[in-house]
Length: 396
Image (cartoon, rainbow, N blue to C red):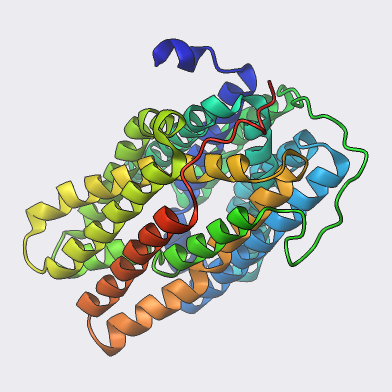
């Protein structure tokens, strides 16, 4: 596999490096936001909820918008460079914020950047490799993205332990931001045949095969049980895990995903996307059941969260590769827009429902519901979305 890995086009490696440096900065900022708002700007949880809610909702909607326009313009690079540039500019400016509404504006800009780049970037990846290497390409990209998610929080913790003020730490995010934009600018636009007829955008997904629409419906069901990961960390803390170990627990998840994303996603090129995703979703369901039922054994949290990292490694790349297998080549940007919108839009109701079940009934009920959604979605995916590796959309 190593020979095949290093034979991947430079576009794939550059996009991976772009995600690594961008996520290093982004995940450095993320755990600092609650501290910055509470201790520096004297704002409370309500402000944090408003900021993150507006920012994430906007990013989800823009992923569809940018994907559609990338197809219309037959260009992905401009959206990728613009999206990463906006985020790179907004993060260090947080250091100058004097009130939480300013933070809202800058976080909004950061999520707008993510919304503009995500679907075109995924389309760029899919267009850069033949169909039988899509799993490997997306797996490598997710591995490098997760590597950034490990480096960022660890770097933030180290700088805080050295006594560096939060505003100074935020300013330092300018360096990985500049590297990110420089790498993005060096990426070549992948070749795409110019279509004489560009299908008009349709809210009913006209132009997409029925199997792609079924995939989105199954994804929506799974995502209904895939609430915010903050609930997993809250469960660990409520079980008695010391607070200083909570970030380390999440770093374990990212590290596991980083190590196994490339080999597991590459398996989907040989054995089929849906088979791997079904196994991954089943692992997710088992993880939620065990975490919900485990009320006392703190030592079990560490292997359980590593298990969760395996779910991420098995599914993140394969899910995106399956989009390119099922969607028409001339509508790849739009297809990833719908994929990202479906996953992003369901996050809010999923989190609200999970929180309500936890608070009104019990954590066991909430985690059991999430597991049921995952298992049901896995069964539907197996029966409703046939296992296939479509080579019709290959660029070669």
